[in-house]
Image (tube, rainbow, N blue to C red; front, top):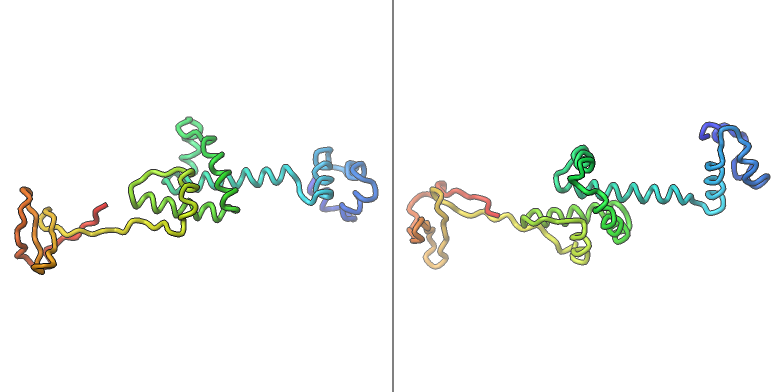
Length: 191
């Protein structure tokens, strides 16, 4: 059908104005359903089926992106959906709502990324619904700062501003003055 339409000498809109849907239907390779879609496009400027398909694709992209932020690849997602370990349809409604709220796919994906980063830094789980709940404060969401704490031989340390010294807290909870060198202090990331 596409090839037949490309090889036409006249523009399709001129053919439609001349004889309507019957004239288009007579083009070899063009059936009734394609004729209806051409007629709908010429009358309304868009095709309902195409718009629904675009929206469905956008929703799929949002759901796939959500799972990507969770560390699930597209192949794993497909396998788990077939095994019913992931109920894919549970995520489509929130994805559609997020798409309506965001306005486009890119903004929705950016919002998911921001919430994912924020939640992961606090060891929290998140779902697509979390993105709407945090929508108004998205610009203020920041991941938790990485805090490095000092340790000496697996015992935590504390800095005393008053005495300007390091203290090691032993297993019994006693504070012992640190007599070692600065290089002996081990800095660990604590979440």
